Length: 443
Ligand code: ASP
Image (cartoon, rainbow, N blue to C red; front, side, top):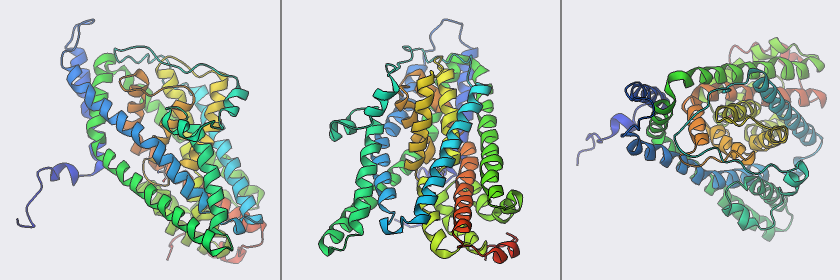
């Protein structure tokens, strides 16, 4: 066999994935729209049952991967924090990360409640109605964060919060053991850590494979949505994009601007200096991938290495303010689109779950969209194959690249602002170096 031989599916696998997903979305919308236009109202569209399973397969694949991704990523993320470094800087940066993420969730939720994206869409997929989990009092919801049986939490769909709770405990425990003075314990903990690390990498490889199928899955889901609903569903998607981006700008200007101003730094001067990592994050859609540039920029900005070498990798793993805004907005959109707007206690849940989801989202492209599934399940919007919720989710998924660019940019900006603010408050910051840096180069 000659090496130059071209694979049968090179045109597919070697082309840009994002472009393919967009094509899947647009083609699906067109085919669905044509089917809708050429079928008399009330008449069954005969070809649909053959297309729908391709979309269902995609939803099943995503659901398959969510528990392992969340569990392994969270354990690795939390166990990477050295307890010995959890001194003043650690406490301050954790507080900053949590507060800004919490604010992001509130901003996303309030904006979505004002703009009400998805309201009146009345999405239909031709089968059953929306399945909602029973509404529970908040106290019960909090109590149920604690699993009675860990393995039950893993096997029971919708118990993802229990998985997160357990993963955080395992991660922190592992972090302490990795720091142990006892060589035997330390070694054992490192082995377990390496296992989790390897497994989370493997899970992300599986995610990448699933993504290769995404264009086909999105196509099939879109055909179904547009065939049954007509083109009226395109408008709400545009409103989701606008609401998310407005939220991202508010987070940057008011939340980060506020923190910077309180610390006597000009926000716009700061954003100008930070433009390299911000732009890199925007185009790569990965906080993890942007990390080297974020670190170099922090260095150029005069932040001491001792601070940023700890706070930035931590931020790229657990601090995702842009993702939080996106998830809150999309949760409201999907609830509206399926005709069951969120109740007050579901909104409280959205805030709590989005903050947790931010911790559990890996800094890689598209991770936030997978975590959105978790947010939906936790507020009782069950993403079952063939359900109207799965269809609404697929609509959002189709435009994920667009949303991912903006949210990743804000994720990275948030890490850098927190790092600078904490460094300044700890006198680990060289003001002259900061003032001299223009942001023009990151060399
Ligand atoms: N792409 C984002 C990041 O790397 C995560 C996400 O998908 O929300 O920060």
